[in-house]
Image (cartoon, rainbow, N blue to C red; front, side):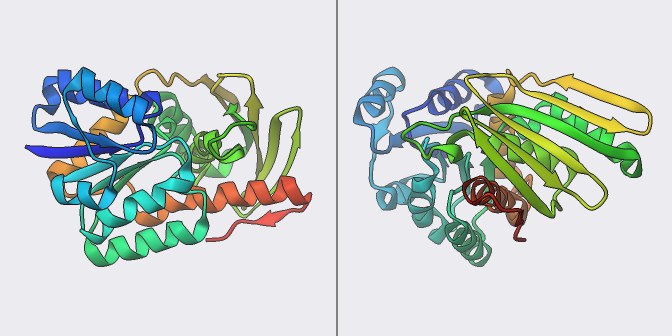
Length: 284
């Protein structure tokens, strides 16, 4: 039995994960035993509903669980909460965004490589079936690709990191569909939307971060025409639980450390571009 803690109860993610692990027989070997974080009201609500303990101190929780899921809405808290578990070599799920700060992301994975701490996480949307179909369309004949467009929501005005709160979804979709080697980005913000032109080696694609919308959509332009899909995200919580459970059981990560933190570099490049008006090369 894997005893799991969840830090960050102020969103639907924590309660969705707890519901899946509690009621789905596929996860009879995983038990959420405690929750914590800065929001006492939501901590107590989950305690009352699921009978779990509240442990707000990450160092104390790390002594009491086999693994942790960090689901805080604001990514600026992810590294601080994660560090005690990484130091202890414990497996982690870190929700989107992995972090908002590049140096914190690098510090986490550098330490994880030393301690053997396994990680999954980031945006759940990258594992949606329709995203995988778009990825397959690119991989089938990458030389035929001439461009494309990806669309996802953004929330520019919030208390959870502004642009960084939701932008991980679209950046991770892009990296999954078009590849992990974007070269540079030029972005503009207007009317609570952000449009980013992302340069790859042989083509440029458009990322449309759309405010006040919950549309997820992808389109690929190639020599044969246009391939489009509306993206269904209804099963993404389950995809995240599957990846986390597989990692616990098999001791293998679904993505490399570098793949987990690349979206942090990408998001920061987009943010820097639309705040400075400059073309920004994406760090590797």
